[in-house]
Length: 306
Image (cartoon, rainbow, N blue to C red):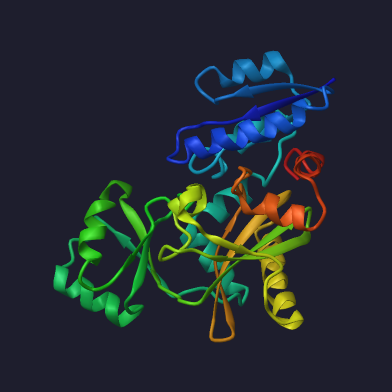
């Protein structure tokens, strides 16, 4: 039997989502009875468990810091064990919203204007608001530099931006990004090829944490996306380009805003969710790929420092 070690839980604010994902994946893989599966939270005993179990492949279902930022990937590579999803450098670049934006801009991928705000900067409050108005304009989006699942992401105006910044001072630094209205399009890449796209129409202001994981949020999922063939090809081509320039592997999901005939890439996620409400499984299903076969394809793409 092939040994699969599933990493779930972790220490980020997305711990519960990771556990939900692991539960869904374990349930599917366990149906075939041909895998020896162990689900592990990577705590202080993780390396000992890893060495004792000796998995053929580690299925990384962690989210957020320590799980998709290159940290756990570095441990797995040092142990020379195959693991799913992107490698050390790709993971660390993709989760860092400032660094990934710089890479997108260098490669001529349109992304919203931004500034990085440091709490060590004791700029006069009035000067700060005026500076933000001049550099990126209002409304704007405040987000942590390295969180996922839209954790602590807020849309602000000039009247509440200082209040939101005070709320997030635990991070030390945050990203302030120009808010782009318009349609929300998400594109999934699997194994270096376009898997498909989906449009989201949340009843909330944007596709935030509640919209993603609370069934009562009533976000409308539209697939196939209602746009011309040329525009569909354009957005999927951008997502594939982002996947490749970040040197990602396995599955990624890129988040876009479509406004005034242009696609703005917000970010590329190297560890997209796999819960019952997640987008990648929904896109795969639309393209006649079952949840179980999606997991198998992700496992097949596992590697050591690819």
